[in-house]
Length: 474
Image (cartoon, rainbow, N blue to C red; front, side):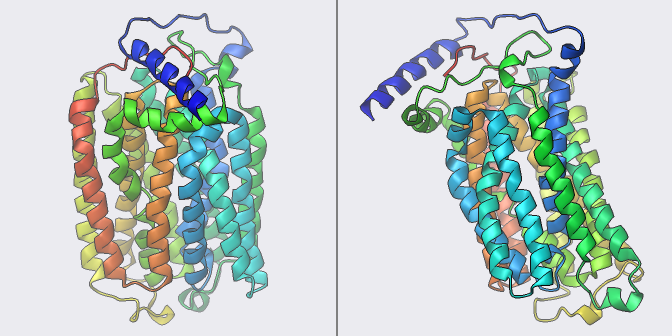
């Protein structure tokens, strides 16, 4: 351990010289011909988006149906609690694993769990006593998801130049959200032709929906083999993407604490990280699944995902990469917009939540797409889609302003996904044991507001107009 600490100290010293701006990044010539297209950072981030389109996108579509498309939400709530528990533990170290194995292999390993998890719901539908298998699959997916999202975050934030980060992050989230749109459209279309009586009685989704989701998630696994080697990636400004030198496992673990020591501002983003998946439980289980029919849930999820596409492009391109303003100004504008959206959607949700409880909901009173009060109730799902995409895009953009180094960004992403999953594990478990809907909503509102308040000092003190380039490998 002493050797590892010595290595880490040496690396930290090197980082210090880098941060001082004493070394300018070398400029490389970008490839020509078809390789110029294939190795273009924009294309690679888009391909990364399609990997997540097929895997997390299908997971999101399934989650958005509420209860995984089943009659009861208990199994899914417990499975997600297991998922985010393992995600939280392994997410803390996933940056280390990513830096040792490399982003491409880490990404490939991470995709497999999504196919298993989705397939488990099909098995549970065929064999109602297989709920334990769904929970176990959720725990396995937590490990896989920690790998996928860490690799994704490090690549997405390191490939663009500083002026492109908002656009690239927004583009990725738009493509990911498109996966939710397609998945939701499949679920909605396959369940639309059920009779009105069936829709009102909230029958579960058909086997075809699960089979389609499994096939699409397997396509995502295959797509990872077409990703470019990050060692060959050169940004559009000619700078090379900094790759980890893989010194040793011990050093990589020590680097977790080196990252905290060198950039302690990241700690103030931890509450924002913690809240970033917390709000899904109320949205999908305690609102969408609680008071809507299966048919209406599918349409709700469709408009939710569609809203995410426009929201990610809006905040990424129109706000965060707006060249008319300095980056610090854009950071404040983004903060104000997200903070305002937190209060808009939660005040709105509070008034709806007052009209029902966990004990009062019944399939006989579920809202269908032909119900007179459906248009008013679906609108909040659109605004929740706006909030979700704006929140995630802004969080990644903030981390991206703190470094351009793939290795350091992998560690930051690991922190992000670990804390994000800790919050999600707790709230999904709370939902699984039957905590009142209102309690979950109020805790969601409080945590999201607090996350933005804690992030404000980072925006004021840490975000600069330019990030000092880190040219040495850690």
